[in-house]
Image (cartoon, rainbow, N blue to C red):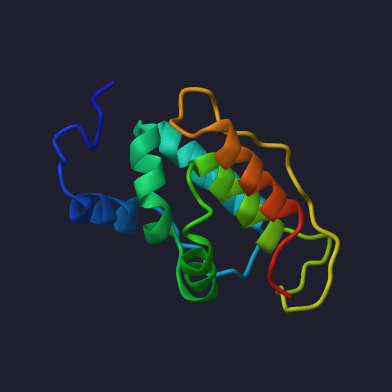
Length: 135
């Protein structure tokens, strides 16, 4: 399979690729479905893990992008992004998320061993996810 980004060295090219091939998420709509569609598109286009991680901010707009920027320091892998993203935007309610308490669907995702994160980083991120510091 010819890799679609094999000759691309700049983030701007990745951004243009994402703009033309992917649907952006604003925080409204089914987050589970959108995340699955996006990961399937990553596989279809042959995006490597590093490109998937770099693509995250280009896949989000409006409220979802603002949420991403607020949590950027916690997001050290695509798996951790997925976990936090689903906690924020996936619920048993089909209504748009507000600051109200709703039952959240929390997938059990851990960073693969080949990612360069320490056990301490993973543990800290897991604890923050379990007990958010914001209200």
